[in-house]
Structures are given as C-alpha cells and as structure tokens.
Image 1 (cartoon, rainbow, N blue to C red):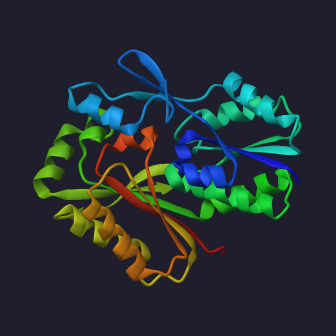
Image 2 (image 1 turned 30 degrees about the vertical axis):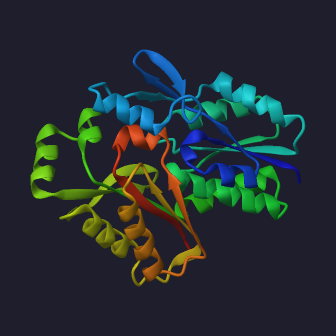
Length: 282
C-alpha cells in the first residue's frame, strides 16, 4: 500500500525523522503582536521567548481550519492509496474536529486523534510510519493507532511557572508559592488532557533526576524501542543530566532529543523538559 502520512506541527518531530518517513506537517497558526505566523515556518520558540522577555503578551495558537485541511488532503488523496493524518489531542485543540470534517470529502483520508501533544503525538506518528512500512492500509492503520495512542506516556517538568501564570492556567498566588518553595511541577497527559502530577522541590537538575527516576525506575512494562527527551530550551548540563538518568535506568535502543515547538513553548515557556515513551501492550 502507498500511504501518505501527515501530522500537525505540534508533533515536535525533528527534520531528520520527518524526512526519513516522508511525513508532511500542517502548521498551526500563531498570533503575536497582531500578526499571524505559522508554527515552525516563520515563527520559532526563540521568537516567543524574546517577545515575552521584552514585556510582550503570550502568543495565541489557533487550530488549522477544515478548508486548510481539505486543501492539504487534496494534494495527496488522488496519488496515494490512502492518507493518514494524525492530530494533536482533541482535548487541546479543535484541529482534530476540523480534520475529521475535511476528511469526509475524501474516501481514502483518515484523521486520527493522537490523544497527546508534542513528541507524545510524535510517537503516534512514528507508529503510523511503522505500520505503513508493514503494508497495512489506511483504515487498518487508523484503527491500530486509536489503540496505540492509549499506550503513550507523556509528561514534562517545569522550571518556572511564568508562562502558565501569564496564560491564566496558574494563579499568581500559586506561582509565588511555588517559587518561594522551589517547587517544580510535573505536567502529565492523562486521557488526552493535561493534569498536574507530582511536585518536586529543590534545584531543577535534582528535581529532573527525581522526576525521570519516578517515571522509569524498575519498570518492566515499557517498550524499549525509543524514548524522546523533549525540551523547550535548557542548559547543556540539564540536558545531559536527563540523558544520563534515562540511560542509567532503562536500556532504550534510541534516546532521541528534540526541541519543543511553539505550542508547548507558548504554554510552558523555557526550562521545560520531559520524557515521552510507550508502554507495552497489555
């Protein structure tokens, strides 16, 4: 089967992985300073950080609309046996709803809810690539991904709460208390939604090591093919701490470092880092 894979830009996969599997990205819109940009095309996280550091408001991300999806799907539907498009979780954006609406114009286009974000979403995209290489058809891939998405484990630990406070997701009092107590919260994806997990206390690298240990130590239910270490801008020392901790705890065959795109960056800000991997099927 000749399958075309498409994803939203929110999957945060590297250019190397996108090229390796011939994955096309549809960028989300990012509104900042009254102008509209395209995630990863003409705006990047460093632009957002510089804008906010200079006193600017947080940018606002906007879903791809149905007409835009239909235009993208039309490019490939006639020349491929099937098109499989994987969206950011429907709980985070109306992208999936819009993609489903657009897919109804085609008999061979399948829109899949990744139930995730960032490289948690990316892991679902890569599973689609693996299934396509095995020769599965579009409908079979879509059905398999709905099950696979529930096995993805995605979480991040935040060094600071400034962006969450600015975005109204954390009160000023809570942010002040967390700063005074040196608390570093873990944000988890549960059933396609974001939730606050364990809060760590102390220097960030120490908290990071504890967080990764809690996620990986002693686990025998992990699929050890690949783990993503995804961050929105951390020091080399912090990144190395994460990599050393992962490798000490579990023998993943691929430990892949990626940087978060504008969606995660505009919500969580710099200094965010997470480990994202897959559980074995039950």
